[in-house]
Image (cartoon, rainbow, N blue to C red; front, side, top):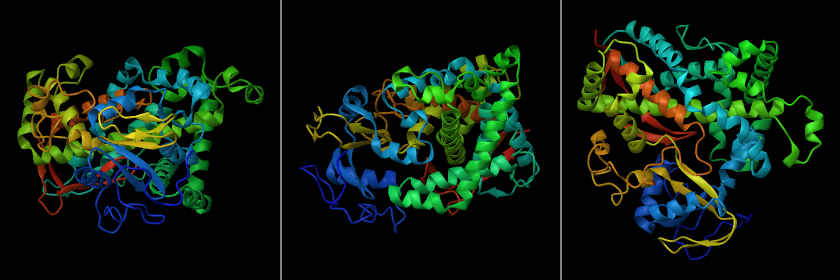
Length: 486
Protein backbone atom coordinates (compact mmCIF):
# COMPACT_ATOMS: atom_id res chain seq x y z
CA UNK A 1 0.00 0.00 0.00
CA UNK A 2 1.29 3.43 -0.93
CA UNK A 3 2.11 5.88 1.79
CA UNK A 4 -0.13 8.93 2.00
CA UNK A 5 2.70 11.07 3.40
CA UNK A 6 3.81 13.66 2.45
CA UNK A 7 0.47 15.18 1.54
CA UNK A 8 0.82 16.38 -2.05
CA UNK A 9 -0.73 15.82 -5.46
CA UNK A 10 0.50 12.66 -7.17
CA UNK A 11 0.93 12.24 -10.91
CA UNK A 12 -0.96 14.15 -13.59
CA UNK A 13 -4.53 13.88 -12.31
CA UNK A 14 -6.06 17.27 -11.41
CA UNK A 15 -6.94 18.34 -7.89
CA UNK A 16 -6.04 20.72 -5.07
CA UNK A 17 -2.85 20.43 -3.03
CA UNK A 18 -3.98 19.15 0.37
CA UNK A 19 -3.50 20.59 3.83
CA UNK A 20 -1.66 18.59 6.48
CA UNK A 21 -4.06 16.25 8.35
CA UNK A 22 -7.19 17.86 6.87
CA UNK A 23 -6.51 17.10 3.20
CA UNK A 24 -9.03 18.93 1.01
CA UNK A 25 -11.78 19.02 3.65
CA UNK A 26 -11.19 22.68 4.51
CA UNK A 27 -10.79 23.80 0.89
CA UNK A 28 -13.94 21.93 -0.11
CA UNK A 29 -15.90 23.53 2.72
CA UNK A 30 -16.65 20.23 4.46
CA UNK A 31 -14.95 21.62 7.56
CA UNK A 32 -16.02 25.05 8.82
CA UNK A 33 -18.33 25.95 5.89
CA UNK A 34 -20.88 23.18 6.41
CA UNK A 35 -20.74 21.83 2.84
CA UNK A 36 -21.60 18.13 2.68
CA UNK A 37 -19.17 15.65 1.15
CA UNK A 38 -21.58 14.80 -1.74
CA UNK A 39 -21.91 18.49 -2.65
CA UNK A 40 -18.16 19.00 -2.32
CA UNK A 41 -17.48 16.14 -4.73
CA UNK A 42 -20.03 17.55 -7.20
CA UNK A 43 -18.27 20.91 -7.07
CA UNK A 44 -14.87 19.30 -7.63
CA UNK A 45 -16.30 17.34 -10.57
CA UNK A 46 -17.59 20.56 -12.15
CA UNK A 47 -14.13 22.09 -11.72
CA UNK A 48 -11.83 19.17 -12.56
CA UNK A 49 -13.89 16.74 -14.64
CA UNK A 50 -14.78 13.07 -14.26
CA UNK A 51 -11.48 11.98 -12.68
CA UNK A 52 -9.62 13.93 -10.01
CA UNK A 53 -7.63 13.59 -6.82
CA UNK A 54 -9.25 14.33 -3.48
CA UNK A 55 -7.86 14.03 0.01
CA UNK A 56 -10.16 12.83 2.79
CA UNK A 57 -8.02 13.91 5.70
CA UNK A 58 -4.70 12.13 5.26
CA UNK A 59 -6.07 9.62 2.73
CA UNK A 60 -5.62 10.26 -0.99
CA UNK A 61 -8.39 8.99 -3.25
CA UNK A 62 -9.06 9.05 -6.97
CA UNK A 63 -12.66 10.13 -7.60
CA UNK A 64 -14.13 8.53 -10.74
CA UNK A 65 -17.49 9.77 -12.11
CA UNK A 66 -17.54 8.80 -15.81
CA UNK A 67 -20.09 6.02 -16.15
CA UNK A 68 -17.98 3.83 -18.47
CA UNK A 69 -15.02 4.16 -16.10
CA UNK A 70 -17.32 3.33 -13.19
CA UNK A 71 -18.60 0.22 -14.95
CA UNK A 72 -15.02 -0.83 -15.68
CA UNK A 73 -13.99 -0.49 -12.02
CA UNK A 74 -17.01 -2.35 -10.65
CA UNK A 75 -16.88 -5.22 -13.14
CA UNK A 76 -13.14 -6.01 -13.09
CA UNK A 77 -12.88 -7.65 -9.69
CA UNK A 78 -9.44 -9.10 -10.47
CA UNK A 79 -8.11 -5.53 -10.65
CA UNK A 80 -10.31 -3.67 -8.16
CA UNK A 81 -11.05 -5.19 -4.76
CA UNK A 82 -12.70 -3.89 -1.60
CA UNK A 83 -11.35 -0.44 -0.80
CA UNK A 84 -8.64 -0.42 1.84
CA UNK A 85 -9.82 3.03 2.92
CA UNK A 86 -13.23 1.82 4.06
CA UNK A 87 -11.82 -1.48 5.30
CA UNK A 88 -9.46 0.37 7.65
CA UNK A 89 -12.39 2.15 9.26
CA UNK A 90 -14.52 -0.97 9.55
CA UNK A 91 -11.64 -3.08 10.85
CA UNK A 92 -11.20 -0.83 13.88
CA UNK A 93 -14.65 -1.82 15.12
CA UNK A 94 -15.31 -5.26 13.63
CA UNK A 95 -12.14 -6.73 12.08
CA UNK A 96 -13.69 -10.18 11.60
CA UNK A 97 -16.81 -9.07 9.71
CA UNK A 98 -17.27 -10.01 6.05
CA UNK A 99 -16.68 -6.43 4.90
CA UNK A 100 -13.07 -6.71 6.11
CA UNK A 101 -12.42 -10.21 4.76
CA UNK A 102 -10.55 -11.18 1.62
CA UNK A 103 -9.61 -14.39 -0.12
CA UNK A 104 -10.41 -17.66 1.63
CA UNK A 105 -11.70 -15.92 4.74
CA UNK A 106 -14.20 -13.93 2.67
CA UNK A 107 -15.43 -17.12 0.99
CA UNK A 108 -15.87 -18.83 4.37
CA UNK A 109 -17.91 -15.93 5.75
CA UNK A 110 -19.89 -15.49 2.54
CA UNK A 111 -21.01 -19.13 2.65
CA UNK A 112 -22.94 -18.36 5.85
CA UNK A 113 -23.72 -14.64 5.61
CA UNK A 114 -25.10 -14.35 2.08
CA UNK A 115 -27.81 -16.92 2.81
CA UNK A 116 -29.26 -14.60 5.46
CA UNK A 117 -30.44 -12.19 2.79
CA UNK A 118 -32.26 -14.55 0.46
CA UNK A 119 -35.59 -13.27 -0.79
CA UNK A 120 -37.67 -15.78 1.17
CA UNK A 121 -35.99 -14.89 4.47
CA UNK A 122 -36.36 -11.16 3.82
CA UNK A 123 -40.05 -11.41 2.97
CA UNK A 124 -40.81 -13.51 6.02
CA UNK A 125 -40.45 -10.32 8.10
CA UNK A 126 -43.33 -8.47 6.40
CA UNK A 127 -45.76 -8.65 9.33
CA UNK A 128 -43.02 -7.72 11.80
CA UNK A 129 -42.28 -4.53 9.88
CA UNK A 130 -45.95 -3.57 9.65
CA UNK A 131 -46.47 -4.16 13.38
CA UNK A 132 -43.64 -1.74 14.20
CA UNK A 133 -45.00 0.95 11.88
CA UNK A 134 -48.37 0.58 13.58
CA UNK A 135 -46.74 1.21 16.97
CA UNK A 136 -45.22 4.42 15.65
CA UNK A 137 -48.59 5.45 14.20
CA UNK A 138 -50.18 5.05 17.64
CA UNK A 139 -47.62 7.49 19.05
CA UNK A 140 -48.25 9.98 16.24
CA UNK A 141 -52.02 9.79 16.68
CA UNK A 142 -51.63 10.89 20.30
CA UNK A 143 -49.89 14.12 19.22
CA UNK A 144 -51.54 17.45 18.46
CA UNK A 145 -52.29 17.74 14.74
CA UNK A 146 -50.51 21.12 14.53
CA UNK A 147 -47.21 19.82 15.89
CA UNK A 148 -44.29 20.13 13.48
CA UNK A 149 -42.18 16.99 13.83
CA UNK A 150 -38.54 18.03 13.62
CA UNK A 151 -37.09 14.75 14.87
CA UNK A 152 -38.30 12.57 11.99
CA UNK A 153 -34.82 11.19 11.32
CA UNK A 154 -34.49 10.13 14.94
CA UNK A 155 -37.95 8.54 14.93
CA UNK A 156 -37.12 6.64 11.74
CA UNK A 157 -33.95 5.39 13.39
CA UNK A 158 -35.88 4.16 16.41
CA UNK A 159 -38.44 2.45 14.18
CA UNK A 160 -35.83 0.63 12.11
CA UNK A 161 -33.72 -0.18 15.18
CA UNK A 162 -36.74 -1.85 16.77
CA UNK A 163 -37.25 -3.94 13.64
CA UNK A 164 -33.53 -4.74 13.56
CA UNK A 165 -33.71 -6.12 17.11
CA UNK A 166 -36.19 -8.79 16.03
CA UNK A 167 -34.66 -9.60 12.63
CA UNK A 168 -31.14 -9.85 14.01
CA UNK A 169 -31.64 -11.18 17.54
CA UNK A 170 -35.35 -12.05 17.83
CA UNK A 171 -35.13 -9.60 20.72
CA UNK A 172 -37.56 -6.87 21.78
CA UNK A 173 -35.57 -3.66 22.27
CA UNK A 174 -38.76 -2.09 23.71
CA UNK A 175 -37.86 1.10 21.87
CA UNK A 176 -41.39 1.94 20.72
CA UNK A 177 -43.09 0.94 23.96
CA UNK A 178 -42.30 3.92 26.21
CA UNK A 179 -42.91 7.62 25.77
CA UNK A 180 -39.31 8.71 25.22
CA UNK A 181 -37.86 5.97 22.94
CA UNK A 182 -35.34 5.00 25.63
CA UNK A 183 -35.77 1.25 25.18
CA UNK A 184 -33.59 -0.96 27.35
CA UNK A 185 -29.92 -1.52 28.10
CA UNK A 186 -29.18 -3.17 24.76
CA UNK A 187 -30.98 -0.38 22.89
CA UNK A 188 -28.74 2.28 24.43
CA UNK A 189 -25.64 0.19 23.80
CA UNK A 190 -26.48 -0.22 20.11
CA UNK A 191 -27.06 3.52 19.77
CA UNK A 192 -23.76 4.32 21.51
CA UNK A 193 -21.93 1.91 19.22
CA UNK A 194 -23.34 3.58 16.10
CA UNK A 195 -22.41 7.01 17.48
CA UNK A 196 -18.82 5.88 17.92
CA UNK A 197 -18.69 4.57 14.37
CA UNK A 198 -19.93 7.88 13.01
CA UNK A 199 -16.98 9.67 14.61
CA UNK A 200 -14.50 7.31 12.94
CA UNK A 201 -15.60 7.84 9.35
CA UNK A 202 -13.43 10.85 8.55
CA UNK A 203 -10.86 10.49 11.32
CA UNK A 204 -7.26 9.30 10.77
CA UNK A 205 -6.65 5.77 12.05
CA UNK A 206 -4.40 6.84 14.92
CA UNK A 207 -7.02 9.33 16.17
CA UNK A 208 -9.73 6.67 15.87
CA UNK A 209 -7.69 4.19 17.91
CA UNK A 210 -7.05 6.75 20.65
CA UNK A 211 -10.69 7.82 20.66
CA UNK A 212 -11.96 4.27 21.13
CA UNK A 213 -9.34 3.43 23.73
CA UNK A 214 -10.41 6.27 26.00
CA UNK A 215 -14.12 6.36 25.15
CA UNK A 216 -15.72 4.67 28.14
CA UNK A 217 -19.20 4.86 26.61
CA UNK A 218 -18.08 2.93 23.52
CA UNK A 219 -16.22 0.30 25.56
CA UNK A 220 -19.22 -0.16 27.84
CA UNK A 221 -21.55 -0.40 24.84
CA UNK A 222 -19.44 -3.08 23.20
CA UNK A 223 -19.35 -5.13 26.40
CA UNK A 224 -23.13 -4.86 26.82
CA UNK A 225 -23.72 -5.93 23.21
CA UNK A 226 -21.26 -8.80 23.58
CA UNK A 227 -22.86 -10.00 26.82
CA UNK A 228 -26.38 -9.88 25.40
CA UNK A 229 -25.36 -11.52 22.13
CA UNK A 230 -23.55 -14.38 23.87
CA UNK A 231 -26.56 -14.91 26.14
CA UNK A 232 -28.80 -15.06 23.06
CA UNK A 233 -26.41 -17.56 21.45
CA UNK A 234 -26.53 -19.77 24.54
CA UNK A 235 -30.31 -19.61 24.51
CA UNK A 236 -30.40 -20.55 20.83
CA UNK A 237 -28.15 -23.54 21.49
CA UNK A 238 -30.69 -24.93 23.96
CA UNK A 239 -33.49 -24.87 21.36
CA UNK A 240 -34.52 -28.17 19.80
CA UNK A 241 -33.88 -28.71 16.11
CA UNK A 242 -37.49 -28.13 15.07
CA UNK A 243 -37.73 -24.83 16.96
CA UNK A 244 -34.38 -23.65 15.63
CA UNK A 245 -35.40 -24.52 12.07
CA UNK A 246 -38.56 -22.41 12.42
CA UNK A 247 -36.70 -19.45 13.90
CA UNK A 248 -34.10 -19.56 11.13
CA UNK A 249 -36.79 -18.39 8.71
CA UNK A 250 -36.76 -14.86 10.14
CA UNK A 251 -33.94 -14.45 12.66
CA UNK A 252 -30.29 -13.93 11.70
CA UNK A 253 -28.80 -15.13 14.97
CA UNK A 254 -30.71 -18.42 14.79
CA UNK A 255 -29.17 -19.01 11.37
CA UNK A 256 -25.68 -18.06 12.48
CA UNK A 257 -25.80 -20.33 15.53
CA UNK A 258 -25.75 -23.34 13.22
CA UNK A 259 -22.50 -22.02 11.73
CA UNK A 260 -20.66 -21.82 15.07
CA UNK A 261 -17.40 -23.71 15.29
CA UNK A 262 -17.49 -26.64 17.71
CA UNK A 263 -13.80 -26.32 18.56
CA UNK A 264 -12.56 -22.75 18.07
CA UNK A 265 -9.00 -23.54 19.17
CA UNK A 266 -8.72 -26.33 16.62
CA UNK A 267 -10.14 -24.18 13.81
CA UNK A 268 -7.83 -21.30 14.73
CA UNK A 269 -4.80 -23.55 14.28
CA UNK A 270 -5.77 -24.48 10.71
CA UNK A 271 -4.75 -22.65 7.53
CA UNK A 272 -7.52 -20.26 6.45
CA UNK A 273 -8.32 -22.45 3.42
CA UNK A 274 -9.18 -25.37 5.73
CA UNK A 275 -11.26 -23.54 8.33
CA UNK A 276 -14.97 -24.28 8.72
CA UNK A 277 -17.71 -22.33 10.44
CA UNK A 278 -17.53 -19.05 12.36
CA UNK A 279 -16.13 -18.27 15.79
CA UNK A 280 -18.21 -16.43 18.36
CA UNK A 281 -16.09 -13.32 17.86
CA UNK A 282 -16.77 -13.49 14.12
CA UNK A 283 -20.51 -13.84 14.73
CA UNK A 284 -20.38 -10.83 17.07
CA UNK A 285 -18.59 -8.73 14.44
CA UNK A 286 -21.07 -9.77 11.75
CA UNK A 287 -24.01 -8.72 13.91
CA UNK A 288 -22.38 -5.35 14.64
CA UNK A 289 -21.81 -4.87 10.92
CA UNK A 290 -25.48 -5.62 10.24
CA UNK A 291 -26.36 -2.93 12.77
CA UNK A 292 -24.14 -0.21 11.30
CA UNK A 293 -24.67 -1.03 7.62
CA UNK A 294 -28.35 -1.89 7.76
CA UNK A 295 -30.28 -0.02 10.38
CA UNK A 296 -29.04 3.50 9.69
CA UNK A 297 -29.13 3.21 5.90
CA UNK A 298 -32.78 2.18 5.86
CA UNK A 299 -33.74 4.74 8.50
CA UNK A 300 -32.06 7.49 6.48
CA UNK A 301 -33.84 6.47 3.27
CA UNK A 302 -37.18 6.45 5.10
CA UNK A 303 -36.53 9.94 6.50
CA UNK A 304 -35.75 11.17 2.98
CA UNK A 305 -38.99 9.59 1.78
CA UNK A 306 -41.02 11.46 4.40
CA UNK A 307 -39.27 14.75 3.61
CA UNK A 308 -39.81 14.37 -0.13
CA UNK A 309 -43.46 13.42 0.30
CA UNK A 310 -44.04 16.59 2.30
CA UNK A 311 -42.48 18.57 -0.55
CA UNK A 312 -44.35 16.76 -3.33
CA UNK A 313 -48.05 16.30 -2.46
CA UNK A 314 -48.79 15.24 -6.05
CA UNK A 315 -46.54 12.20 -5.64
CA UNK A 316 -48.01 11.43 -2.24
CA UNK A 317 -51.53 11.52 -3.69
CA UNK A 318 -50.58 9.17 -6.52
CA UNK A 319 -49.20 6.63 -4.04
CA UNK A 320 -52.43 6.76 -2.05
CA UNK A 321 -54.46 6.37 -5.24
CA UNK A 322 -52.44 3.30 -6.20
CA UNK A 323 -52.96 1.80 -2.75
CA UNK A 324 -56.69 2.47 -3.01
CA UNK A 325 -56.92 0.82 -6.42
CA UNK A 326 -55.17 -2.28 -5.12
CA UNK A 327 -57.53 -3.35 -2.39
CA UNK A 328 -58.33 -0.21 -0.41
CA UNK A 329 -56.11 1.91 1.79
CA UNK A 330 -56.77 0.07 5.05
CA UNK A 331 -56.47 -3.50 3.82
CA UNK A 332 -53.59 -5.57 5.14
CA UNK A 333 -50.43 -5.45 3.07
CA UNK A 334 -49.59 -8.81 1.55
CA UNK A 335 -46.64 -9.78 -0.58
CA UNK A 336 -48.78 -10.00 -3.72
CA UNK A 337 -50.28 -6.61 -3.04
CA UNK A 338 -46.86 -5.11 -2.41
CA UNK A 339 -45.60 -6.50 -5.72
CA UNK A 340 -48.50 -4.80 -7.53
CA UNK A 341 -47.50 -1.30 -6.37
CA UNK A 342 -45.59 -0.27 -9.49
CA UNK A 343 -45.74 3.47 -8.87
CA UNK A 344 -44.47 3.03 -5.32
CA UNK A 345 -41.51 1.13 -6.80
CA UNK A 346 -40.80 4.18 -8.95
CA UNK A 347 -41.00 6.44 -5.90
CA UNK A 348 -38.61 4.24 -3.93
CA UNK A 349 -36.16 4.26 -6.85
CA UNK A 350 -36.47 8.03 -7.17
CA UNK A 351 -35.87 8.57 -3.45
CA UNK A 352 -32.75 6.40 -3.67
CA UNK A 353 -31.61 8.29 -6.78
CA UNK A 354 -32.43 11.80 -5.59
CA UNK A 355 -31.04 11.27 -2.09
CA UNK A 356 -28.78 8.18 -2.13
CA UNK A 357 -28.24 7.02 1.47
CA UNK A 358 -24.68 5.89 0.72
CA UNK A 359 -21.86 8.27 -0.11
CA UNK A 360 -19.79 6.15 -2.45
CA UNK A 361 -18.36 2.81 -3.49
CA UNK A 362 -14.65 2.42 -2.76
CA UNK A 363 -12.16 0.08 -4.41
CA UNK A 364 -8.40 -0.46 -4.21
CA UNK A 365 -6.37 -0.90 -7.40
CA UNK A 366 -4.60 -4.28 -7.35
CA UNK A 367 -2.47 -3.78 -10.48
CA UNK A 368 -1.73 -0.78 -12.70
CA UNK A 369 -4.66 -0.02 -15.00
CA UNK A 370 -5.96 2.58 -17.47
CA UNK A 371 -9.59 3.69 -17.31
CA UNK A 372 -11.31 3.25 -20.72
CA UNK A 373 -13.42 6.42 -20.84
CA UNK A 374 -11.06 9.04 -19.42
CA UNK A 375 -7.75 7.34 -20.18
CA UNK A 376 -6.64 8.05 -16.61
CA UNK A 377 -3.67 6.00 -15.43
CA UNK A 378 -4.19 4.27 -12.09
CA UNK A 379 -1.48 2.57 -10.09
CA UNK A 380 -1.36 -0.36 -7.71
CA UNK A 381 -2.49 0.77 -4.27
CA UNK A 382 -4.54 3.73 -5.47
CA UNK A 383 -7.88 4.19 -3.72
CA UNK A 384 -10.78 4.72 -6.14
CA UNK A 385 -13.97 6.38 -4.93
CA UNK A 386 -17.15 6.29 -7.03
CA UNK A 387 -19.48 9.08 -5.83
CA UNK A 388 -23.02 7.76 -6.06
CA UNK A 389 -24.51 11.28 -5.97
CA UNK A 390 -22.48 12.41 -9.00
CA UNK A 391 -23.87 9.58 -11.13
CA UNK A 392 -27.42 10.15 -9.91
CA UNK A 393 -27.30 13.83 -10.92
CA UNK A 394 -25.27 13.54 -14.15
CA UNK A 395 -27.25 15.20 -16.97
CA UNK A 396 -25.48 12.97 -19.50
CA UNK A 397 -27.09 9.89 -17.97
CA UNK A 398 -30.68 11.04 -17.48
CA UNK A 399 -33.12 12.19 -20.16
CA UNK A 400 -35.30 14.04 -17.65
CA UNK A 401 -33.63 16.74 -15.53
CA UNK A 402 -31.83 14.77 -12.78
CA UNK A 403 -32.21 17.69 -10.36
CA UNK A 404 -35.98 17.21 -10.57
CA UNK A 405 -37.71 14.79 -8.18
CA UNK A 406 -39.90 12.94 -10.68
CA UNK A 407 -40.72 9.25 -9.99
CA UNK A 408 -42.44 8.90 -13.37
CA UNK A 409 -39.03 9.04 -15.04
CA UNK A 410 -38.78 5.28 -14.42
CA UNK A 411 -41.95 4.73 -16.46
CA UNK A 412 -41.02 7.20 -19.18
CA UNK A 413 -37.81 8.50 -20.78
CA UNK A 414 -35.47 7.15 -18.09
CA UNK A 415 -37.04 3.70 -17.93
CA UNK A 416 -33.98 2.21 -19.64
CA UNK A 417 -31.34 4.34 -17.94
CA UNK A 418 -27.72 3.23 -17.90
CA UNK A 419 -27.46 0.47 -15.26
CA UNK A 420 -24.52 2.21 -13.60
CA UNK A 421 -26.27 5.58 -13.36
CA UNK A 422 -28.24 4.39 -10.32
CA UNK A 423 -26.12 2.67 -7.67
CA UNK A 424 -27.72 3.40 -4.30
CA UNK A 425 -26.20 0.23 -2.82
CA UNK A 426 -23.20 -0.10 -5.15
CA UNK A 427 -22.97 -3.18 -7.38
CA UNK A 428 -20.65 -5.96 -8.42
CA UNK A 429 -18.56 -8.32 -6.30
CA UNK A 430 -18.62 -6.13 -3.18
CA UNK A 431 -22.09 -4.65 -3.40
CA UNK A 432 -24.20 -4.20 -0.29
CA UNK A 433 -25.28 -7.71 0.71
CA UNK A 434 -28.34 -6.38 2.53
CA UNK A 435 -29.76 -4.27 -0.29
CA UNK A 436 -32.74 -6.58 -0.91
CA UNK A 437 -33.70 -6.29 2.75
CA UNK A 438 -33.24 -2.50 2.67
CA UNK A 439 -35.35 -2.06 -0.47
CA UNK A 440 -38.07 -4.37 0.79
CA UNK A 441 -38.18 -2.75 4.22
CA UNK A 442 -38.32 0.76 2.73
CA UNK A 443 -41.21 -0.19 0.46
CA UNK A 444 -43.16 -1.87 3.26
CA UNK A 445 -42.70 1.04 5.66
CA UNK A 446 -43.56 3.61 2.99
CA UNK A 447 -46.70 1.72 1.95
CA UNK A 448 -47.94 1.38 5.52
CA UNK A 449 -47.37 5.06 6.24
CA UNK A 450 -49.16 6.10 3.06
CA UNK A 451 -52.13 3.92 4.04
CA UNK A 452 -52.60 6.00 7.16
CA UNK A 453 -51.09 9.48 7.12
CA UNK A 454 -50.32 12.51 4.97
CA UNK A 455 -47.11 14.49 5.42
CA UNK A 456 -47.20 18.25 4.84
CA UNK A 457 -44.39 20.79 4.64
CA UNK A 458 -43.57 22.38 7.99
CA UNK A 459 -42.11 25.47 6.32
CA UNK A 460 -38.78 26.56 4.81
CA UNK A 461 -37.09 27.23 8.12
CA UNK A 462 -37.51 23.69 9.44
CA UNK A 463 -37.99 21.58 6.29
CA UNK A 464 -35.25 22.84 4.00
CA UNK A 465 -33.55 19.48 3.52
CA UNK A 466 -29.82 19.63 2.97
CA UNK A 467 -27.63 16.73 3.98
CA UNK A 468 -24.62 15.67 5.99
CA UNK A 469 -22.59 12.48 5.77
CA UNK A 470 -22.17 10.03 8.62
CA UNK A 471 -22.59 6.27 8.16
CA UNK A 472 -25.15 7.30 5.56
CA UNK A 473 -25.95 10.63 3.90
CA UNK A 474 -28.61 12.01 6.22
CA UNK A 475 -31.12 14.83 5.83
CA UNK A 476 -30.09 17.87 7.83
CA UNK A 477 -33.42 19.71 8.23
CA UNK A 478 -36.79 17.93 8.29
CA UNK A 479 -39.90 19.49 9.76
CA UNK A 480 -43.27 18.02 8.77
CA UNK A 481 -46.84 17.96 9.96
CA UNK A 482 -48.59 14.60 10.17
CA UNK A 483 -52.32 14.21 9.66
CA UNK A 484 -54.29 10.97 9.69
CA UNK A 485 -56.40 10.17 6.65
CA UNK A 486 -59.26 8.64 8.66
